[in-house]
Length: 140
Image 1 (cartoon, rainbow, N blue to C red):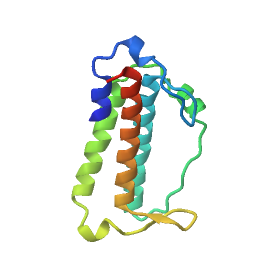
Image 2: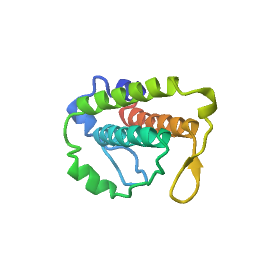
Image 3: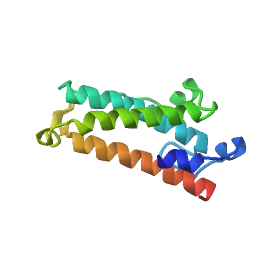
Image 4: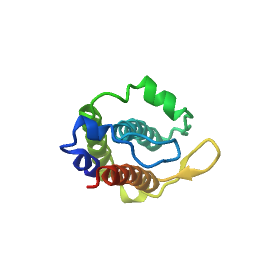
């Protein structure tokens, strides 16, 4: 996984290095890893609900409060393991998805829908974006 490779061998000081400003402010490298893990968990649940035909709701939350409540100052190892596990689990599910199910639009509360392909593209893009931010911060 690229995000794990991006922080491999990073010191505690490097993990606390601030990255460039984003839509929610300036985060440390460590915060990017934990955020990616949190979003991976929520995405894993969203995939399962979506495939089961549940109309999905998006939960709004304040990112700074989420970071404080979930103790983003902790080590990154468990978050990297969590990302790897959710990716592996999602792949196992999606590998078994019949071809005709990939483009089925599944519901959102506003009447729009998205497909398993949309979900996969969004999940992959999100992880890649955070890996690239981390790589720039660590100059890797």
